[in-house]
Length: 150
Ligand code: HEC
Image (cartoon, rainbow, N blue to C red; front, top):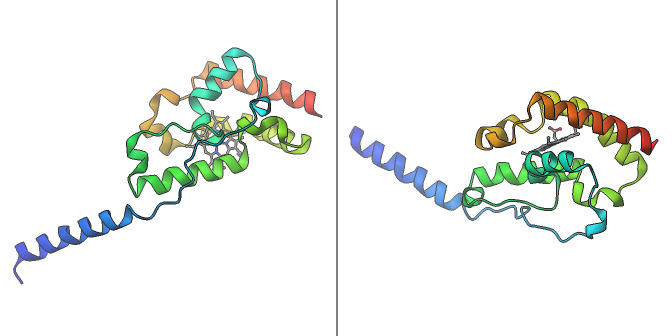
């Protein structure tokens, strides 16, 4: 086999695997129907930050750009959404126990310092980066809410 042949067969297999991988779908990315009463309530400014920067992974609403459907990116996105919703789904907030609500608000101020939104998400969604002002606003809100849950 000459070099050219190996190269063509390499890309041939990459293509085969890429196309084949498209059929593996985890199907987590669905917009779920929730009781609107269960959605978290927050001051307008906080709410708009949550919707912009957190709702893609922490709510039952999911924006779905076409590339989210392309494996292997689709697997990453679906895992983020699955695990994000497990930690907290703001669309279901009022259905949570006090303990769970408290735990989320307790962790939130630390989480947004470095890890939230997930850095890999921010590569694609720079508009979701939190400014210092927004981080402070979220922290203050979370701490105040936490006090009312206790
Ligand atoms: C790209 C998806 C994604 C976005 C966007 C996102 N999160 Fe998360 N979040 C996750 C995942 C996945 C986890 C669980 C795994 C982990 O902790 O890394 C998580 C965990 C958390 C936790 C729990 C942390 C802990 O210590 O257990 C909190 C609190 C949180 N997120 C808040 C937020 C807030 C607030 C925003 C918006 C500013 C946000 N997240 C944006 C995916 C996301």
